[in-house]
Amino acid sequence: MGRPRTLPAVLLATPDETEAQFYEALQQADLERMVALWSDEEEVACVHPRGARQVGLDAIRASFEEMFARGGVDVRATQVRRLVTAGLAVHHVVEELQVMSAEGPRKAWVLATNVYLKTPLGWRMIVHHASPGEPLDLHGLAEPPSTLH
Amino acid sequence: MGRPRTLPAVLLATPDETEAQFYEALQQADLERMVALWSDEEEVACVHPRGARQVGLDAIRASFEEMFARGGVDVRATQVRRLVTAGLAVHHVVEELQVMSAEGPRKAWVLATNVYLKTPLGWRMIVHHASPGEPLDLHGLAEPPSTLH
Image 1 (cartoon, one colour):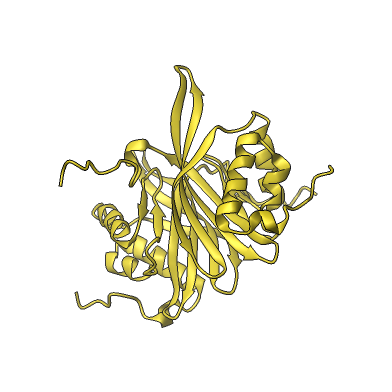
Image 2 (cartoon, rainbow over the protein chains, first blue to last red):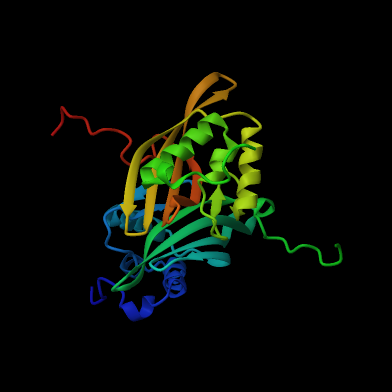
């Protein structure tokens, strides 16, 4: 309430800016901002790690509401690979999370595919598909040792 | 060898046709066909269930080669949801698999996001992101009981 239903286009001027808004909303458990950066296309979709497929903004909103009831997510987007065309941007992100475990805080990794669509209202999210990753599995996570050829 | 390096555009005239080629290649462990339906964009990417992120066609080819060494995948694409714009198609697919377990054959489900790009050479795959699903989790899997209002 008092918050715009949608984010102004100036905040979503590039796919990177939209992605920054997405991860800030995730960190801050900011449901209104999270919802406001999605496209109003009908078939937007979201898969959370180990979660169900959510299709449509109402289902997506409910899934983030449930997530944010447990607070923000300590997440950092790393190793972003980008495929950008005239009207579409696909970002492949390795999300680095700090999570609590029985042994205390530890790092976890998630592989995310984020897709953005260029609209008159800026670049808007149409897909977030996230699934658990393992650090040793992650392609390109480790730098090649520079002392070896 | 003797196979075209890329599939003719006529076989990839719509996103649905490209998707059909993808699942047939998966079923038949047909590596050349699988590789030939991807776009030649640099940042194409693929995540197999519980697998690493593969970026670029060489890495994607190697991942399917490893998979197909164990044979084809008994997979069926169901519940496809489509978001299509002028040059891009995003398909959300529930993959139904028959897998062998210690207790014999059983069904398994995978949630996949497939993204296709319209090119002069037809609609080509640029993303396949697949992650394990659970039947009870799957949004829209169960038909609403028609005897209830």
